[in-house]
Length: 291
Ligand SMILES: [Zn+2]
Image (tube, rainbow, N blue to C red; front, side, top):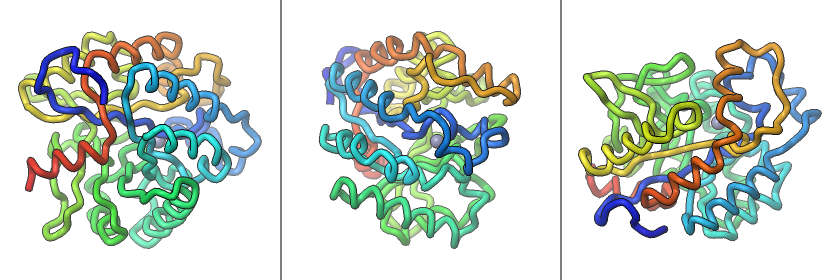
């Protein structure tokens, strides 16, 4: 946990990295087939090393939601992440959205991923993030499957309307999705202005829009709501030299490639401005608030 530069007594916010390569993002799914992934230039290891250096300089610990597909091919960097005190959690095997799987395939995906991650680090995997925040109204079984597999928390819901994801009726802050199970859901942070919700927990919002907007939103969540923010980004977001994907929709390309060059400095600023910690620690605190 880092210093408290902004104001004392602020909650520790959840800092998370979704560990996937530049060719695995949901927006490119229709133009880059999974069968071709092994032939593409992998940049995830080098980018994770840079993320580790950034976190080390800021003195923060975080959670890395990792694809099983990545862990199997890049064991060294996953071990390095865990060895530096960060949490390794699950992002599923190969980025298939939960609502495309159904309960049985979802369970199999969880088990396969967890086996690889736990084998690498020797530490229990207790957290899960659905690819593209794909737990929503179409997956009423998903939290039950997670609880049955011993997960303590999930951070898999974007409680807003977005063109690629979102479940706008979901609560903005931590809640227990099941009665009689300790599982806590930690939705990605949103800002609410005049009854409208905006994504404010990272992703394109943080990278593309001015830093001051994210800072305002996280301060408001900490001070006005008294809650922890949940923030995420991807290793490819600090990599301006990544290959460009032709054939993807213009809107997806604009969102993916804008702001890459300034991202690392922007992140360093954010890390210094708030308190940050691992998602498992944030889940414990938030669980006590919603008991
Ligand atoms: Zn992802």
